[in-house]
Length: 496
Figure 1 (cartoon, one colour):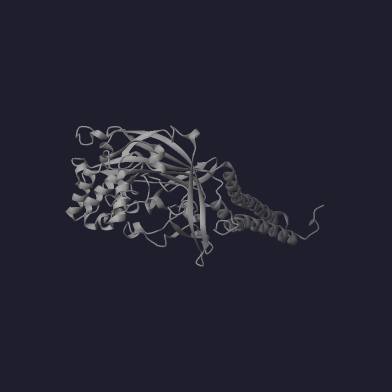
Figure 2: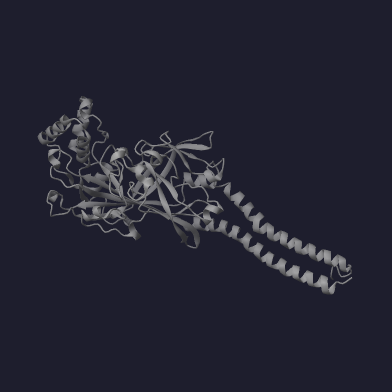
């Protein structure tokens, strides 16, 4: 039976409009209150403290990470002084490694930060690799020799060059300008025999003043990743925000190795800032609707890089945002004035490098290493034209980083960087007549792709938030119709 059939017309009007108000109230709740409750509960999990989802995943990530390593085999190094022959390279790899990060020596501080070190472990995955990491061989630039040459060039004392020439010419310390036909595993992790490095280490031990400012690794042989596998010290000491003061600060770097800046770059370029990439602050609705740049701190570069917002990103129906590395990343003040502080030469000599390369010698034992995107992608054409065998393509050589806006969880990462050795006439006998050329040594791609389980979890959160808005719109429509019906009956049916 009708609960208000015997009510007066005035009561019917009151009850009908109260019902309309209730419907609009429920619409407001589902449109604003319910999403706010979901956001509040969810964001309690997006701070770095024991027991939260973000912290536990940071400690033991459910998402696999891989590192692909490609080596450049220099096929005609003996023609380096021939002006009619360009250095030629054949790409080998990828050699695929499963990468695991273990956070150790963790300390929660009183200023809403956590201090920690990270141990990176690489495990070879032969079934996904192209080639054999244990038996493949390459010819690659003699990085220690070029480092010695760089020291001579930068020295104001002519005796340094004379001593180096005497050392190299009379002691059979190098077989040429390359590590010739060496095993990939040795030139990467195990260390290939380097008589020059050993002689310099012995000299430094006996007569330190003769070595001067030359930074020498303590390795038994030379390798680009020697002493890095399973090392907790190599990546340094991190201090980053936990987000316990505000979830908008989660994951933001505060200091590295105890300092808020690095000495290798000036001004903003040397500031320790941005995310390490493993933990990011959730984006506010304003940021999600109008994303800006994304700042990523990379320890291998000893600096932060700025990625440009590219657009929307979808992975198995999960919606996100993606940022890419553009020509600004490795500019040196040529086209982007704000990157002038990346130049490591004296300010009156900047920019010293053409666009597309970053000098990382300051954090690589003084070695003349320059970083670019793979295959000199987006770099000045002169670098690519000076060699043969490289073919840059955006699809396979672009640096990409995609994340889920509401949670800050990385969805897909393709971190691609190439390491090049600066070969030139450094003023010592063995490099006499050499052209000034950037020799590619190897490039890496760090890959992350969300698993379906994590995608489902994030989509559940998105669905809850979306369901509230959909319910609100439905109730709003019902409320408008109910209001129209109540108004009609009040005017034409429920007359006093």
